[in-house]
Amino acid sequence: MRHSRKIRTKELIDRPRLEIAKDTLAFAWKTSLAPCVILCGLVLVVFYSIVHFGFINWDDDKNFIDNPWVKGFLHPRYWIWAWSTRLMDVYQPISWIFLINILSPVSCII
Image (cartoon, rainbow, N blue to C red; front, side, top):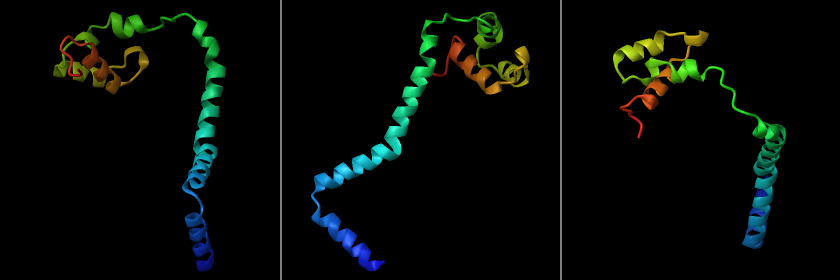
């Protein structure tokens, strides 16, 4: 084992740096970049048709537009509402607090 390690090290020293860089790039392409590119290509092919679809307004009016709780200030009563509500049968307190913060007149996020 030690002998082969010395040979490998000697081979790396003797090889030009450009060859080592090419081998490293080829290895990176085969192991990590190629699968990512293939996956992105497949996602684009599968979901390309949705570009032509219209917007579906199923619950935006109930959740955001007509909901006074998400337009309020960051007051404790809004936090209590966010942690206790099941509006439209969904329990999502972190999302409500985030929305309260984003949609309130005095937002903490810049």
